[in-house]
Length: 360
Figure 1 (tube, rainbow, N blue to C red):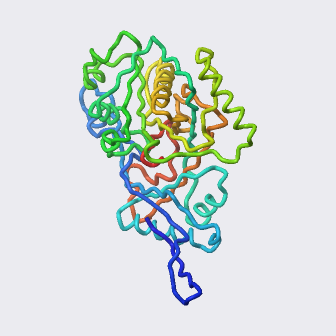
Figure 2: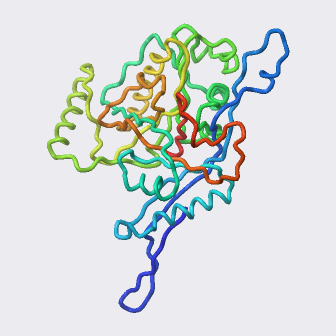
Figure 3: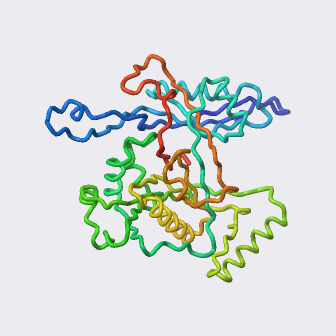
């Protein structure tokens, strides 16, 4: 973290320091692209193996929590904080730096793109689903299995390691106490919790369709609150909740209590394969809704790429969601070799991204 301070003089000629700005940042190793395995390309066998994609990793820095006191804005404090943080990134070996901001936050966009040399990189979507007073119905044709952290790590590394922004320390996420679990959905009749053979056998002879997601407990880290709503809006929202609780079989899409501090669960690591992947993903989201209800959360949220194949299967309310979040990126040093990837900031977007829940 970096802070900006000013010296304040009081009436008795004493000097005090006051914080007028703050910025935080972190560095991690993530996937920035992929390449084919050298063995697959050089194979001289008559029957060549299917080329296996391998991840290309880079050290990526993330800027978060840039704040400047309203009374000290337009004084260059934000720019100085960003420059100081970028220098710390360079000293610690980061090759790229990125920030996430709202698409309509013109002040932030102008600072990073016009003054700091960042370019608009990706526009993922934040999808938010309210947690209703009634339980969501999970299809009886789907079996959901909670994976051990070891099995979850193996599955993610083998199937998701070439996804853009995949963190190389995925094990640190899956073993974190805030991680509520990784859940695998398959068509009923393939596996159960009792007959689960382990992830190695699953990957060796996997069903035609499957889906997976993980749940992160943001409630124990921070709360959110919606402000500025009219009294009438709050009354109408409360009415929907009362009706939903009194008549749960009606499945009324009630508005949760968001006008007071509330918690949320974040879904990450979503993916799947096969013709039924969307239906299985929908069942996993319904399962996650019920998990959030048990934890007294008000919303369930996730963030996916704009071209995510499973996006349509994720329940959400448009009025609560953000169709286009904005990620901006900058290459910190031109002395880096282009390597197998080239300049990541100029690469085309893939179908999916892996959102690190630690940065929510």
